[in-house]
Image (cartoon, rainbow, N blue to C red; front, side, top):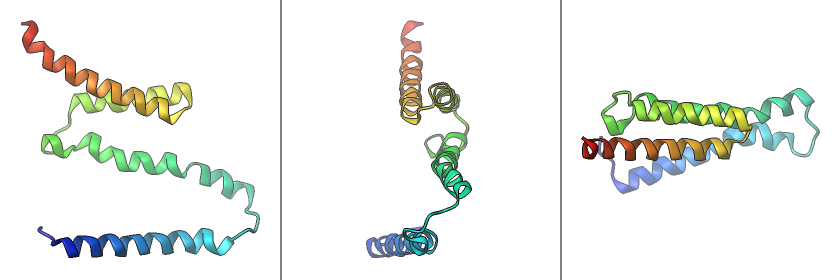
Length: 115
């Protein structure tokens, strides 16, 4: 698939409008009215549900490895989940995952030199 620059920007614009309308249909219509406590509690889990949905395909079928599962990415994802669960802080989890990912790549690059 080859899209022109105009088509890409048109797709981005349409998706932006669609995303806004979907969010506005729920949050915009409520306005300043108080929401039930269970709705507020469920809304707190939205980022926790969205982030794994975005990251899982990049971990399980990364384009960088032509869709083959990569142990380094699995290790980094596991470390992210472990640290996030342990510290209850997403930023520490993300940092731990990044350090694990780049550290593991560095170790793998050094292994042929050590032989």
